[in-house]
Length: 484
Image (cartoon, rainbow, N blue to C red; front, top):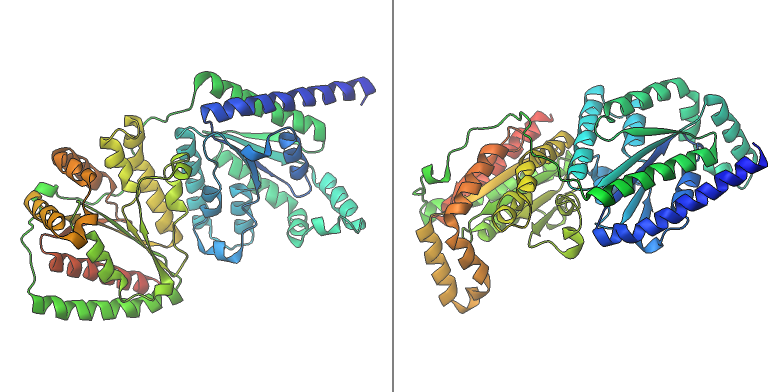
């Protein structure tokens, strides 16, 4: 390359980096979250490319992560967990040094996952990317390409130098030995995951040209977003296998138990649940129990009866309140991805991601497109959890308006219970018809075969607790039998 050409490239690189630095301030001001995924061959120069991208950026507002290098503990979470956990908050840039492509391809090549599991992962990647895109995230996907001969030369150069030989791992040598199969797998993955958000293949043998192209693409993507604003995806509904659900007004709330019946069944079912917890842990089955219901319906007491027989080291109860600023500035499912249980553990959610289609919908905390899109996004999220192997059970704790009023008055007149009653509870009660309409729609659109809803009649709390315990025991026995 001539001296003049080198100088021109250096000048353009400098101008592009400076432009990105200036864009960073507007990215912050307009709250644009940006993900740059850098994939490619071992020794292709991913680290050098990332260094070019970030060289002039304010380090307070970007991060570089290598989520594919996860500790053993994180391997006990769903496939997408490390990537979902790392998504940036609004106004920040997150750069993934390798990600879901490398993870999928290597596990398939090592036969750690079956071809069917691989297909499910590809589907999950497309869903994950689309959900982020529809929620306003900017995503740039880059692949650094080099020839087999170039990779061989770089590997040799690294290994011949004492200071750099550590940079070549056994995985890299294996990839090189199976170069043709890896190329076919990479190309296939890009073909299957590039329809909505395209892949950009860069020439890793020309370092400066690759950096120029990456910065041009990033600058252009940001310019477009700054001009047109954040993307808001339109709702659509995939054909999930849905279970028929009654309307709340059709549910008979009269079932009740005597104290004697309650005590006998409680003891029997809790004993069995404690036994099943040991089996669940040994078989590494994650269990996710989701509680929604009317204020004062008895969720807390119900959860306590589920939790009592469990080993306290093997479960968590997650009370979900209004999102914190950190949570509010990310895609709404982020705060649930980060609370998922490890394999073999229980997680009990007191309120869930269904706030999107209830309180957020009715109180105007999200747009109509947002909550209408959420039915499908939630079904996808729950399918990803059950594809991982989780048992997902969802309970709507149901009472009538008269029972709620009586319990509100009891709380108001009992000093040690007054903390349970808030002005918001009274405001929500005034919107009972609107909430009932939203809940009916939620039950109709999200009770899937893999993650069903159960309506729990709770005018009699004893009956509600026993019914919930029995469902949990029955479903866990079914899950254990399926893994024999």
